[in-house]
Length: 260
Image 1: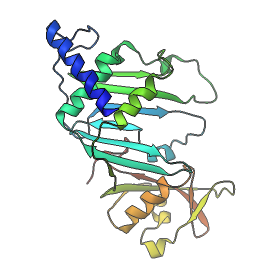
Image 2: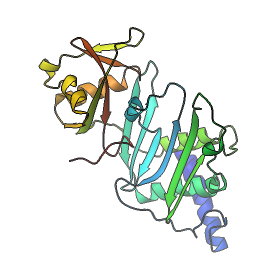
Image 3: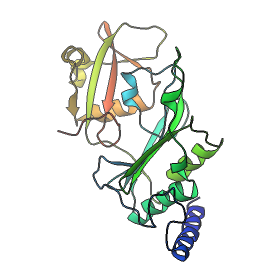
């Protein structure tokens, strides 16, 4: 796929040079691609959202399927099955980012597809749908699967995004915000026993404060692995109470506040 993408972009570059422009009025640029270099800026993102099982609190644990950030970081996920989510990352070169953006905007013509999820009739069950966004040359654009994509459109772009990196690395966070909220224990949900005293992190205290706490100690790796290798509706049992726990990493989880 990487070789295929490189060949497409090379051929595209030759066409643009010969034509003296972008060759497509929908791209909004003439062969030059720029983007905001802020590490929090999303240059490209592909993700799925919605669905009847979504919990507004627990969805903060979600990591988008593939994201390229302004500082050229790429973070993506591989679903290994049995609720085991592999998170990978790499630092791309400018050329890799430009090649991919050219592929998405010129070859796949993403600007010709609109976002229409907000135009759908209301329903008791929130529909699950695919969405993509790109922001280059001062032109942010979002589209979703209600915008009349062809059947394989999203998956083709997503797989290409995941294959940009030449040397992917398993992501290991160095710090994260942890939040907890108390819930009624549910015998139908998977549960993990948590000893707050032994861990030095009591969900009872976190839930009572309703505030996120920044952690960098051993609990960070423990919670990261538990949350991403367990059911998304996992509950933590501490003493006689049960809690839902959210772990948000800046630059990885879209809802994460900046690091302190």
